[in-house]
Image 1 (tube, rainbow, N blue to C red):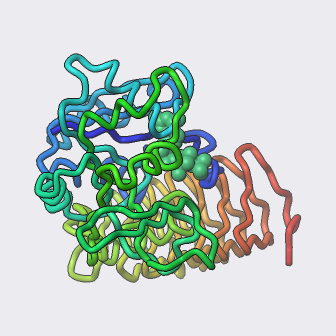
Image 2: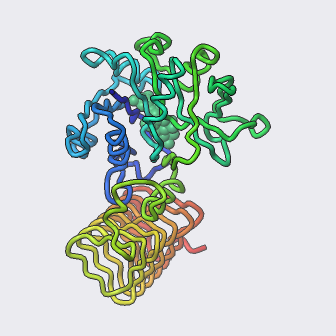
Image 3: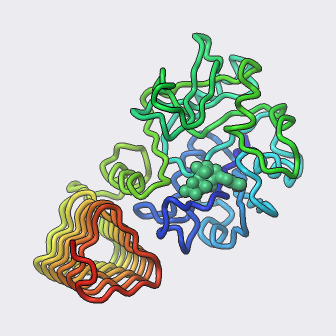
Length: 371
Ligand code: GTP
């Protein structure tokens, strides 16, 4: 079976992490985010994945190649201009020899999940639906597409980003669809079409079904908060991924040539060549990329610090993201979901909190921001 994965969005909500690389190849724990999706699809017997890109996929190609290491074939399709979530599927169909086939999968490219696609495909075949949406329960559906079902699983209503007073179910669309070819006829060619806003409403009562995945793990990694949650959930094994196998009995994975004089408390993952100085602490739920240096007396906890970043003497990085090559000076505090962008130089004694975002190229002098 073929699957189209939509990866053409700009990922604006994850900036500055996505200022220099597309969301799908942003590193999540120890691999590009898309690797999790591809491993999950391969486990469900998908043989070919079409990556529907909104712009030239050079970086994606470099990172993911032809797909052999994931056990499937990767095909890259680049839209001449962004076509929207529906238009991208139609465009992909037109670009492929033989099209997408009679039945295929469509996936949003920013979802970390282990839901049982096989069960959904079986339910789709049994019901005779033209489209079956994966549904997952969430506490607050206001940021998602709320889906109402009748007792037979037919969708009776689809509300994109509902207002609080409209919420009468906790089931939302998880961005994973099984489609029959006939759905493509509802998408005008060469046009920007949203599958959520323009296609699903037309299919309500006309063969649109939902399949509820009650106990699956599901997270849209599109915001810094959820990116951090995804990292700690992977380390803690709350979602089934290949990363868990790398952790030792203390829940720690250490890359090659690490020098650890300080303390590391699992679950935590250190890339190759990390240096943890004496008196430094790497706490639970932390990911360090390759060649990260944590200087004496510094603490990193529940945080993601990517390749070649430096955490200065006595600094604290907690519940925050430090992008590749960023340097945090001495005695800084970076907490509360803050993101320090690629290559940023943060002078000594700065305090970042409350989701602060520092964009690439910025150099903050000593003590520039102190709350
Ligand atoms: P934000 O800018 O942060 O909202 O991110 P986004 O645009 O990546 O996410 P959104 O939730 O709007 O899109 C859902 C999925 O569809 C994501 O995986 C996007 O990459 C993808 N997507 C959105 N628009 C397009 C498009 O025009 N073409 C393609 N190929 N994919 C798209």
